[in-house]
Image (cartoon, rainbow, N blue to C red; front, side):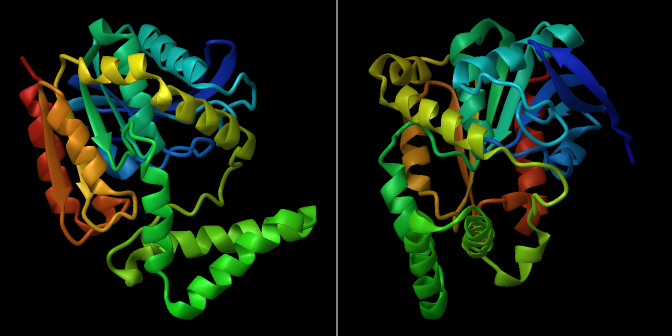
Length: 287
């Protein structure tokens, strides 16, 4: 087993927690959120014998310092300064969920530094995914859970701070039940109870990303990406896969893979298939 080296690094005006493991093709894995923290060690373990994998907690939460600003541009700059710190000429930029969006934003801004992009269970750049996602998520709940979910959503509007925390945690639990194909695997998903989660970063960066996806110049820049891009998505993820497949069809060097019987964390439910797909993509980037 390859052991990761953890350290806190001064990056772009903030102290960021990082973990590095393996040797080989430089690769970074960006966690989801925004405002979450790293849970991608299982994915890193799949490739650390052929890659030098960097993981980190994005600014604002987890083991990193809670210092703004919280916007897409700053998060991209954090990534670039991480690359410079490790003295990588180029690297594979990968991410899961929001982290996949961050990987695309980085590739647009720093194409010469991006060897390839690994987009796992992201939402792409078509902002119409939101409505379908919400509908899919609610429909995946049982009737009683659906009623509770809708009641909690309504109660959030006028809840006090303490009550709001309870409602938020319960909504998060119900939402997690829709992120799996097999309900028995819910307990295997990241819990986000060990370290702080930044709801400020979630709101601010999420809003900024929505503005990015509405910008026609940014969307065209994504379509014009010339490096290999691998889109991997769980077939049962409530975040609609057809938006991702459509995006993949517009890029010149992209591959789209749908993992059956898996949700938003496909490596949890189908680890062998995910490992084979990701390793094949990574190894194709080795000269």
